[in-house]
Length: 123
Image: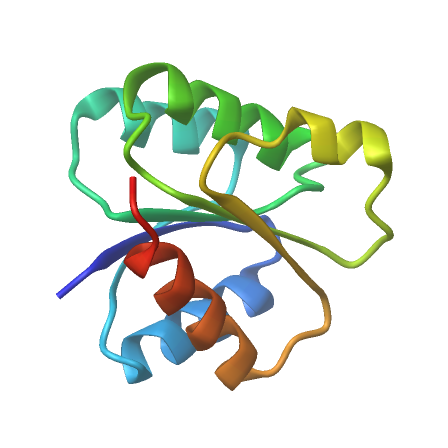
């Protein structure tokens, strides 16, 4: 069973995302801030994919920061970014290898498909 680290600062969205991914057979680990996500990454806790909102706690590129921290220590883990606002070319340039973007709002099936696609892509 693949494990997904979810980084989302909206408690309702976080709970819904956890439920959706668990329904599709994934185990989840959650963080609500950049600092919590960094602590999980640096703890050595195993996970197979990072799913992060780009906008975290008034940190407009929080999710991109988390992705960059992850790639420094775990280049093998893919990253799925999400946001409710438009994605600029500058933001896209900050994404790590094996990453993708899923715009909000998304349906449960779209999330599950994006996660499955990234997990099956070669490292």
